[in-house]
Length: 495
Image (cartoon, rainbow, N blue to C red):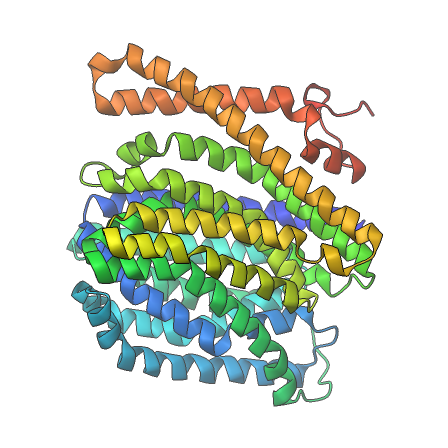
Protein backbone atom coordinates (compact mmCIF):
# COMPACT_ATOMS: atom_id res chain seq x y z
CA UNK A 1 0.00 0.00 0.00
CA UNK A 2 1.38 3.44 -0.94
CA UNK A 3 2.07 5.95 1.78
CA UNK A 4 -0.64 8.27 0.43
CA UNK A 5 -3.19 5.46 0.61
CA UNK A 6 -2.04 4.57 4.13
CA UNK A 7 -2.51 8.17 5.21
CA UNK A 8 -5.89 8.27 3.44
CA UNK A 9 -7.03 5.14 5.27
CA UNK A 10 -5.93 6.61 8.58
CA UNK A 11 -7.62 9.90 7.72
CA UNK A 12 -10.90 8.16 6.94
CA UNK A 13 -10.97 6.56 10.39
CA UNK A 14 -9.87 9.73 12.18
CA UNK A 15 -12.30 11.90 10.23
CA UNK A 16 -15.22 9.55 10.87
CA UNK A 17 -14.53 9.62 14.60
CA UNK A 18 -14.06 13.38 14.65
CA UNK A 19 -17.25 13.99 12.64
CA UNK A 20 -19.28 11.87 15.06
CA UNK A 21 -17.68 13.68 17.98
CA UNK A 22 -18.37 17.06 16.41
CA UNK A 23 -22.03 16.15 15.93
CA UNK A 24 -22.16 14.93 19.53
CA UNK A 25 -20.60 18.17 20.75
CA UNK A 26 -23.22 20.19 18.89
CA UNK A 27 -26.01 18.18 20.51
CA UNK A 28 -24.40 18.43 23.95
CA UNK A 29 -23.89 22.19 23.53
CA UNK A 30 -27.51 22.66 22.43
CA UNK A 31 -28.70 20.77 25.51
CA UNK A 32 -26.50 22.58 28.02
CA UNK A 33 -27.19 26.00 26.44
CA UNK A 34 -30.84 25.51 27.39
CA UNK A 35 -29.94 24.49 30.95
CA UNK A 36 -27.22 27.00 31.87
CA UNK A 37 -26.69 30.73 31.36
CA UNK A 38 -24.03 32.58 29.33
CA UNK A 39 -22.49 33.68 32.63
CA UNK A 40 -22.00 30.06 33.77
CA UNK A 41 -20.48 29.15 30.41
CA UNK A 42 -18.17 32.16 30.69
CA UNK A 43 -16.91 31.02 34.10
CA UNK A 44 -16.28 27.53 32.73
CA UNK A 45 -14.45 28.89 29.68
CA UNK A 46 -12.26 31.12 31.87
CA UNK A 47 -11.19 28.24 34.16
CA UNK A 48 -10.72 25.89 31.21
CA UNK A 49 -8.44 28.36 29.44
CA UNK A 50 -5.99 28.35 32.38
CA UNK A 51 -6.04 24.56 32.33
CA UNK A 52 -5.10 24.58 28.65
CA UNK A 53 -2.33 27.11 29.17
CA UNK A 54 -0.71 25.14 31.99
CA UNK A 55 -0.90 21.91 30.01
CA UNK A 56 0.95 23.59 27.16
CA UNK A 57 3.63 24.97 29.44
CA UNK A 58 4.40 21.61 31.06
CA UNK A 59 4.06 18.56 28.82
CA UNK A 60 2.68 19.54 25.42
CA UNK A 61 5.82 18.51 23.52
CA UNK A 62 5.97 14.92 24.77
CA UNK A 63 3.38 13.46 22.34
CA UNK A 64 5.17 15.13 19.42
CA UNK A 65 8.47 13.68 20.59
CA UNK A 66 6.89 10.22 20.70
CA UNK A 67 5.74 10.58 17.09
CA UNK A 68 8.95 12.02 15.64
CA UNK A 69 11.55 9.61 17.07
CA UNK A 70 12.69 6.96 14.61
CA UNK A 71 13.48 4.49 17.42
CA UNK A 72 11.69 4.33 20.75
CA UNK A 73 12.48 1.48 23.15
CA UNK A 74 10.83 0.42 26.38
CA UNK A 75 13.17 2.43 28.61
CA UNK A 76 12.57 5.58 26.60
CA UNK A 77 8.80 5.09 26.79
CA UNK A 78 9.00 4.62 30.56
CA UNK A 79 10.96 7.88 30.89
CA UNK A 80 8.38 9.75 28.79
CA UNK A 81 5.49 8.30 30.79
CA UNK A 82 7.13 9.35 34.05
CA UNK A 83 7.69 12.87 32.68
CA UNK A 84 4.03 13.06 31.72
CA UNK A 85 2.83 11.81 35.10
CA UNK A 86 5.02 14.20 37.07
CA UNK A 87 4.23 17.09 34.77
CA UNK A 88 0.51 16.46 35.13
CA UNK A 89 0.65 16.39 38.92
CA UNK A 90 2.78 19.54 39.01
CA UNK A 91 0.50 21.43 36.64
CA UNK A 92 -2.57 20.38 38.64
CA UNK A 93 -1.06 21.84 41.81
CA UNK A 94 -0.14 25.06 40.00
CA UNK A 95 -3.66 25.22 38.52
CA UNK A 96 -5.29 25.06 41.96
CA UNK A 97 -2.98 27.79 43.26
CA UNK A 98 -3.36 30.17 40.33
CA UNK A 99 -6.97 29.77 39.28
CA UNK A 100 -8.58 32.03 41.95
CA UNK A 101 -6.46 34.98 40.85
CA UNK A 102 -7.00 34.08 37.20
CA UNK A 103 -10.78 34.16 37.62
CA UNK A 104 -10.52 37.47 39.46
CA UNK A 105 -8.58 39.05 36.58
CA UNK A 106 -11.08 37.75 34.03
CA UNK A 107 -14.06 38.84 36.14
CA UNK A 108 -15.46 35.31 36.06
CA UNK A 109 -16.08 34.23 39.69
CA UNK A 110 -18.52 31.56 38.46
CA UNK A 111 -15.49 29.50 37.45
CA UNK A 112 -14.74 28.48 41.06
CA UNK A 113 -17.25 25.61 40.99
CA UNK A 114 -15.23 23.84 38.27
CA UNK A 115 -11.80 23.93 39.95
CA UNK A 116 -11.75 20.47 41.57
CA UNK A 117 -12.82 18.50 38.49
CA UNK A 118 -10.63 20.50 36.12
CA UNK A 119 -7.64 19.90 38.42
CA UNK A 120 -8.23 16.15 38.03
CA UNK A 121 -8.30 16.62 34.26
CA UNK A 122 -5.12 18.68 34.48
CA UNK A 123 -3.32 15.84 36.24
CA UNK A 124 -4.50 13.16 33.80
CA UNK A 125 -4.18 15.15 30.57
CA UNK A 126 -0.45 14.64 29.83
CA UNK A 127 -0.67 10.87 30.33
CA UNK A 128 -3.72 10.69 28.06
CA UNK A 129 -1.89 12.58 25.32
CA UNK A 130 1.22 10.39 25.60
CA UNK A 131 -0.73 7.12 25.51
CA UNK A 132 -2.74 8.35 22.51
CA UNK A 133 0.50 9.30 20.71
CA UNK A 134 2.02 5.87 21.43
CA UNK A 135 -1.06 4.23 19.91
CA UNK A 136 -0.85 6.43 16.82
CA UNK A 137 2.84 5.62 16.50
CA UNK A 138 1.86 1.98 15.98
CA UNK A 139 -0.03 3.10 12.84
CA UNK A 140 -3.31 1.67 14.05
CA UNK A 141 -5.81 4.36 13.00
CA UNK A 142 -8.86 2.18 13.66
CA UNK A 143 -7.94 1.59 17.29
CA UNK A 144 -6.95 5.22 17.74
CA UNK A 145 -10.31 6.39 16.37
CA UNK A 146 -12.17 3.93 18.59
CA UNK A 147 -10.31 5.05 21.73
CA UNK A 148 -11.07 8.68 20.96
CA UNK A 149 -14.71 8.06 20.07
CA UNK A 150 -15.55 5.75 22.96
CA UNK A 151 -13.99 8.08 25.53
CA UNK A 152 -15.93 11.03 24.12
CA UNK A 153 -19.27 9.25 23.90
CA UNK A 154 -19.10 7.81 27.42
CA UNK A 155 -17.92 11.07 28.99
CA UNK A 156 -20.46 13.23 27.14
CA UNK A 157 -23.28 10.80 27.88
CA UNK A 158 -22.49 10.81 31.60
CA UNK A 159 -22.17 14.59 31.58
CA UNK A 160 -25.49 15.07 29.80
CA UNK A 161 -27.32 12.71 32.18
CA UNK A 162 -25.85 14.48 35.21
CA UNK A 163 -26.75 17.89 33.78
CA UNK A 164 -30.34 16.86 33.16
CA UNK A 165 -30.65 15.25 36.59
CA UNK A 166 -28.95 17.90 38.74
CA UNK A 167 -29.43 21.08 36.65
CA UNK A 168 -26.02 22.13 38.06
CA UNK A 169 -23.39 23.65 35.77
CA UNK A 170 -20.45 21.96 37.55
CA UNK A 171 -21.36 18.95 35.42
CA UNK A 172 -19.69 20.71 32.47
CA UNK A 173 -16.31 19.88 34.03
CA UNK A 174 -17.22 16.21 34.48
CA UNK A 175 -16.95 15.67 30.72
CA UNK A 176 -13.41 17.11 30.60
CA UNK A 177 -11.99 15.00 33.42
CA UNK A 178 -13.79 11.77 32.50
CA UNK A 179 -12.89 11.95 28.80
CA UNK A 180 -9.18 12.32 29.55
CA UNK A 181 -9.28 9.44 32.03
CA UNK A 182 -11.01 7.14 29.54
CA UNK A 183 -8.70 8.17 26.68
CA UNK A 184 -5.61 7.34 28.74
CA UNK A 185 -7.01 3.94 29.74
CA UNK A 186 -8.27 2.91 26.30
CA UNK A 187 -5.17 4.09 24.42
CA UNK A 188 -2.95 2.07 26.75
CA UNK A 189 -5.27 -0.94 26.47
CA UNK A 190 -5.26 -0.88 22.64
CA UNK A 191 -1.46 -0.73 22.27
CA UNK A 192 -0.14 -4.04 20.94
CA UNK A 193 3.49 -3.57 19.83
CA UNK A 194 6.11 -5.28 21.99
CA UNK A 195 9.03 -2.94 22.57
CA UNK A 196 12.59 -3.99 23.16
CA UNK A 197 14.23 -2.42 26.16
CA UNK A 198 16.55 -0.29 24.05
CA UNK A 199 18.85 2.35 25.43
CA UNK A 200 17.61 4.85 27.99
CA UNK A 201 16.74 8.27 26.70
CA UNK A 202 18.46 11.34 28.06
CA UNK A 203 16.31 13.93 29.78
CA UNK A 204 17.98 16.74 27.86
CA UNK A 205 17.21 14.97 24.56
CA UNK A 206 13.51 14.94 25.39
CA UNK A 207 13.48 18.48 26.71
CA UNK A 208 15.51 19.89 23.81
CA UNK A 209 12.76 19.05 21.32
CA UNK A 210 9.75 19.49 23.60
CA UNK A 211 10.93 22.95 24.65
CA UNK A 212 10.64 24.16 21.06
CA UNK A 213 7.25 22.51 20.54
CA UNK A 214 6.03 23.91 23.85
CA UNK A 215 7.11 27.44 22.97
CA UNK A 216 5.37 27.35 19.60
CA UNK A 217 2.17 25.66 20.82
CA UNK A 218 1.97 28.13 23.70
CA UNK A 219 2.29 30.93 21.16
CA UNK A 220 -0.63 29.54 19.16
CA UNK A 221 -2.68 29.12 22.31
CA UNK A 222 -2.08 32.72 23.36
CA UNK A 223 -2.96 34.01 19.90
CA UNK A 224 -6.28 32.17 20.12
CA UNK A 225 -7.10 33.04 23.71
CA UNK A 226 -5.95 36.64 24.19
CA UNK A 227 -9.01 38.14 22.42
CA UNK A 228 -11.46 36.20 24.60
CA UNK A 229 -9.48 36.96 27.77
CA UNK A 230 -9.69 40.66 26.97
CA UNK A 231 -13.43 40.30 26.33
CA UNK A 232 -13.84 38.71 29.76
CA UNK A 233 -11.64 41.25 31.56
CA UNK A 234 -13.41 44.21 29.91
CA UNK A 235 -17.01 43.00 29.65
CA UNK A 236 -17.39 40.15 32.15
CA UNK A 237 -18.20 36.44 32.07
CA UNK A 238 -21.57 36.84 30.32
CA UNK A 239 -19.89 38.45 27.29
CA UNK A 240 -17.25 35.71 27.38
CA UNK A 241 -20.00 33.10 27.34
CA UNK A 242 -21.57 34.69 24.26
CA UNK A 243 -18.19 34.93 22.53
CA UNK A 244 -17.15 31.34 23.23
CA UNK A 245 -20.54 29.91 22.23
CA UNK A 246 -20.42 31.85 18.97
CA UNK A 247 -16.90 30.60 18.36
CA UNK A 248 -17.80 27.01 19.20
CA UNK A 249 -20.22 26.81 16.24
CA UNK A 250 -17.18 26.73 13.96
CA UNK A 251 -14.40 25.67 16.31
CA UNK A 252 -15.90 22.25 16.95
CA UNK A 253 -15.89 21.17 13.26
CA UNK A 254 -12.60 23.03 12.66
CA UNK A 255 -10.98 21.21 15.55
CA UNK A 256 -12.43 17.93 14.26
CA UNK A 257 -10.97 18.42 10.77
CA UNK A 258 -7.59 19.61 12.05
CA UNK A 259 -7.34 16.81 14.59
CA UNK A 260 -8.23 14.19 11.97
CA UNK A 261 -5.59 15.51 9.57
CA UNK A 262 -2.90 15.69 12.23
CA UNK A 263 -3.70 12.30 13.72
CA UNK A 264 -3.51 10.73 10.26
CA UNK A 265 -0.34 12.49 9.06
CA UNK A 266 1.87 13.06 12.10
CA UNK A 267 3.03 9.42 12.47
CA UNK A 268 4.30 9.44 8.86
CA UNK A 269 6.51 12.55 8.84
CA UNK A 270 9.42 10.67 10.43
CA UNK A 271 9.31 8.27 7.45
CA UNK A 272 9.71 11.04 4.80
CA UNK A 273 13.43 11.72 4.44
CA UNK A 274 13.63 13.78 1.22
CA UNK A 275 12.79 17.48 1.74
CA UNK A 276 11.22 18.10 -1.69
CA UNK A 277 8.93 15.07 -1.25
CA UNK A 278 7.86 16.35 2.16
CA UNK A 279 7.25 19.84 0.74
CA UNK A 280 5.05 18.44 -2.01
CA UNK A 281 3.14 16.33 0.49
CA UNK A 282 2.55 19.36 2.72
CA UNK A 283 1.32 21.47 -0.18
CA UNK A 284 -1.05 18.76 -1.36
CA UNK A 285 -2.34 18.22 2.19
CA UNK A 286 -2.97 21.95 2.60
CA UNK A 287 -4.77 22.09 -0.75
CA UNK A 288 -6.97 19.11 0.07
CA UNK A 289 -7.83 20.39 3.55
CA UNK A 290 -8.67 23.85 2.20
CA UNK A 291 -10.64 22.36 -0.69
CA UNK A 292 -13.00 20.62 1.70
CA UNK A 293 -12.87 23.02 4.67
CA UNK A 294 -13.38 26.34 2.86
CA UNK A 295 -16.75 25.42 1.28
CA UNK A 296 -18.07 23.92 4.53
CA UNK A 297 -17.09 26.92 6.65
CA UNK A 298 -18.21 29.34 3.96
CA UNK A 299 -21.72 27.86 4.06
CA UNK A 300 -21.73 27.93 7.87
CA UNK A 301 -20.43 31.53 7.96
CA UNK A 302 -23.10 33.06 5.73
CA UNK A 303 -25.87 31.20 7.59
CA UNK A 304 -24.36 31.54 11.08
CA UNK A 305 -27.13 33.68 12.57
CA UNK A 306 -29.85 31.24 11.53
CA UNK A 307 -27.79 28.27 12.73
CA UNK A 308 -27.28 29.76 16.21
CA UNK A 309 -31.00 30.56 16.48
CA UNK A 310 -31.85 26.90 15.89
CA UNK A 311 -28.92 25.48 17.82
CA UNK A 312 -28.83 27.45 21.08
CA UNK A 313 -32.30 28.98 21.28
CA UNK A 314 -33.25 32.24 22.95
CA UNK A 315 -30.74 34.41 24.80
CA UNK A 316 -27.80 33.79 22.46
CA UNK A 317 -28.43 36.47 19.82
CA UNK A 318 -25.05 38.10 20.35
CA UNK A 319 -23.32 34.75 19.79
CA UNK A 320 -25.11 34.49 16.45
CA UNK A 321 -23.95 37.94 15.42
CA UNK A 322 -20.32 37.07 16.21
CA UNK A 323 -20.40 33.61 14.64
CA UNK A 324 -19.97 34.73 11.01
CA UNK A 325 -16.55 36.28 11.50
CA UNK A 326 -15.44 33.58 13.92
CA UNK A 327 -16.44 30.87 11.45
CA UNK A 328 -14.31 32.42 8.68
CA UNK A 329 -11.35 32.48 11.04
CA UNK A 330 -11.93 28.85 12.06
CA UNK A 331 -12.03 27.72 8.42
CA UNK A 332 -8.67 29.35 7.73
CA UNK A 333 -7.08 27.50 10.65
CA UNK A 334 -7.64 24.07 9.05
CA UNK A 335 -5.00 24.30 6.28
CA UNK A 336 -2.85 26.53 8.49
CA UNK A 337 -2.79 23.90 11.25
CA UNK A 338 -1.74 21.20 8.80
CA UNK A 339 1.12 23.31 7.45
CA UNK A 340 2.32 24.33 10.92
CA UNK A 341 2.16 20.78 12.27
CA UNK A 342 4.09 19.43 9.28
CA UNK A 343 6.84 22.01 9.67
CA UNK A 344 7.12 21.32 13.41
CA UNK A 345 7.34 17.57 12.94
CA UNK A 346 10.12 18.11 10.39
CA UNK A 347 11.99 20.43 12.78
CA UNK A 348 11.44 23.59 10.69
CA UNK A 349 10.49 25.82 13.63
CA UNK A 350 11.68 29.03 11.98
CA UNK A 351 8.80 29.15 9.51
CA UNK A 352 6.23 28.60 12.26
CA UNK A 353 7.74 31.32 14.45
CA UNK A 354 7.61 33.74 11.54
CA UNK A 355 3.90 33.06 11.11
CA UNK A 356 3.27 33.46 14.83
CA UNK A 357 4.97 36.84 15.03
CA UNK A 358 2.99 38.01 12.01
CA UNK A 359 -0.24 36.85 13.64
CA UNK A 360 0.65 38.65 16.87
CA UNK A 361 1.30 41.87 14.96
CA UNK A 362 -2.03 41.63 13.18
CA UNK A 363 -3.84 41.55 16.54
CA UNK A 364 -2.62 44.97 17.65
CA UNK A 365 -5.08 47.22 15.83
CA UNK A 366 -8.32 45.22 16.40
CA UNK A 367 -7.47 44.64 20.07
CA UNK A 368 -6.70 48.33 20.51
CA UNK A 369 -10.12 49.12 19.03
CA UNK A 370 -11.66 46.56 21.41
CA UNK A 371 -10.06 48.36 24.36
CA UNK A 372 -11.18 51.80 23.21
CA UNK A 373 -14.71 50.97 22.04
CA UNK A 374 -15.61 47.96 24.25
CA UNK A 375 -17.33 46.56 21.14
CA UNK A 376 -17.07 42.77 21.24
CA UNK A 377 -17.19 42.66 17.43
CA UNK A 378 -13.51 43.69 17.35
CA UNK A 379 -12.53 40.55 19.25
CA UNK A 380 -14.11 38.42 16.51
CA UNK A 381 -12.38 40.55 13.86
CA UNK A 382 -9.04 40.03 15.62
CA UNK A 383 -9.43 36.23 15.47
CA UNK A 384 -10.27 36.25 11.77
CA UNK A 385 -7.54 38.71 10.73
CA UNK A 386 -4.94 36.76 12.70
CA UNK A 387 -5.96 33.47 11.06
CA UNK A 388 -5.77 34.99 7.58
CA UNK A 389 -2.33 36.51 8.19
CA UNK A 390 -1.02 33.25 9.68
CA UNK A 391 -2.13 31.16 6.71
CA UNK A 392 -0.75 33.64 4.18
CA UNK A 393 2.64 33.94 5.90
CA UNK A 394 2.92 30.18 6.44
CA UNK A 395 2.23 29.55 2.75
CA UNK A 396 4.95 31.95 1.54
CA UNK A 397 7.41 32.10 4.44
CA UNK A 398 10.07 29.74 3.10
CA UNK A 399 9.83 30.67 -0.59
CA UNK A 400 12.68 33.17 -0.64
CA UNK A 401 15.14 30.91 1.17
CA UNK A 402 14.94 27.87 -1.08
CA UNK A 403 15.81 26.84 -4.59
CA UNK A 404 13.74 27.78 -7.61
CA UNK A 405 11.74 24.54 -7.42
CA UNK A 406 10.56 25.24 -3.92
CA UNK A 407 9.81 28.87 -4.73
CA UNK A 408 7.49 27.66 -7.46
CA UNK A 409 5.90 25.16 -5.08
CA UNK A 410 5.17 27.86 -2.50
CA UNK A 411 3.82 30.27 -5.12
CA UNK A 412 1.59 27.50 -6.47
CA UNK A 413 0.23 26.86 -2.97
CA UNK A 414 -0.68 30.55 -2.51
CA UNK A 415 -2.54 30.56 -5.83
CA UNK A 416 -4.34 27.36 -4.95
CA UNK A 417 -5.51 28.65 -1.58
CA UNK A 418 -6.63 31.97 -3.05
CA UNK A 419 -8.64 30.29 -5.81
CA UNK A 420 -10.25 27.90 -3.33
CA UNK A 421 -11.21 30.80 -1.03
CA UNK A 422 -12.82 32.77 -3.87
CA UNK A 423 -14.59 29.69 -5.20
CA UNK A 424 -15.96 28.84 -1.73
CA UNK A 425 -17.14 32.41 -1.11
CA UNK A 426 -18.98 32.44 -4.42
CA UNK A 427 -20.88 29.20 -3.91
CA UNK A 428 -21.71 30.20 -0.30
CA UNK A 429 -23.23 33.50 -1.41
CA UNK A 430 -25.24 31.79 -4.17
CA UNK A 431 -26.69 29.41 -1.59
CA UNK A 432 -27.40 32.24 0.87
CA UNK A 433 -29.37 34.24 -1.70
CA UNK A 434 -31.50 31.19 -2.47
CA UNK A 435 -31.97 30.47 1.23
CA UNK A 436 -33.04 34.02 2.08
CA UNK A 437 -35.59 34.01 -0.73
CA UNK A 438 -37.01 30.68 0.46
CA UNK A 439 -37.12 31.95 4.06
CA UNK A 440 -39.06 35.05 2.96
CA UNK A 441 -41.76 32.82 1.46
CA UNK A 442 -42.38 31.08 4.82
CA UNK A 443 -41.97 34.16 7.06
CA UNK A 444 -45.53 33.94 8.46
CA UNK A 445 -44.61 30.61 10.09
CA UNK A 446 -42.19 32.23 12.54
CA UNK A 447 -38.49 32.92 13.12
CA UNK A 448 -37.38 29.34 13.74
CA UNK A 449 -39.14 28.06 10.64
CA UNK A 450 -37.49 30.81 8.60
CA UNK A 451 -34.09 29.80 9.99
CA UNK A 452 -34.64 26.10 9.25
CA UNK A 453 -35.77 26.79 5.68
CA UNK A 454 -32.89 29.20 5.03
CA UNK A 455 -30.30 26.70 6.23
CA UNK A 456 -31.80 23.78 4.32
CA UNK A 457 -32.13 25.61 1.01
CA UNK A 458 -28.82 27.47 1.27
CA UNK A 459 -26.91 24.30 2.16
CA UNK A 460 -28.52 22.28 -0.63
CA UNK A 461 -27.92 24.92 -3.32
CA UNK A 462 -24.31 25.49 -2.24
CA UNK A 463 -23.59 21.75 -2.12
CA UNK A 464 -25.07 21.29 -5.60
CA UNK A 465 -22.95 24.18 -6.91
CA UNK A 466 -19.90 22.56 -5.28
CA UNK A 467 -20.54 19.29 -7.10
CA UNK A 468 -21.10 21.01 -10.45
CA UNK A 469 -17.86 22.99 -10.26
CA UNK A 470 -15.62 20.47 -8.47
CA UNK A 471 -14.09 19.22 -11.73
CA UNK A 472 -12.38 22.59 -12.29
CA UNK A 473 -10.74 23.30 -8.98
CA UNK A 474 -7.45 22.38 -7.40
CA UNK A 475 -8.64 19.64 -5.06
CA UNK A 476 -9.74 17.51 -7.98
CA UNK A 477 -6.34 17.86 -9.66
CA UNK A 478 -4.46 16.85 -6.51
CA UNK A 479 -6.64 13.79 -5.98
CA UNK A 480 -6.26 12.75 -9.61
CA UNK A 481 -2.48 13.13 -9.46
CA UNK A 482 -2.40 11.02 -6.31
CA UNK A 483 -4.29 8.21 -8.04
CA UNK A 484 -7.66 8.63 -6.30
CA UNK A 485 -10.55 7.56 -8.53
CA UNK A 486 -13.48 9.95 -8.52
CA UNK A 487 -16.95 9.64 -10.11
CA UNK A 488 -17.21 11.03 -13.63
CA UNK A 489 -19.87 13.57 -12.68
CA UNK A 490 -17.40 15.43 -10.43
CA UNK A 491 -14.59 15.35 -12.96
CA UNK A 492 -13.07 11.91 -12.41
CA UNK A 493 -11.60 10.02 -15.33
CA UNK A 494 -13.13 6.67 -16.28
CA UNK A 495 -11.11 3.63 -15.21
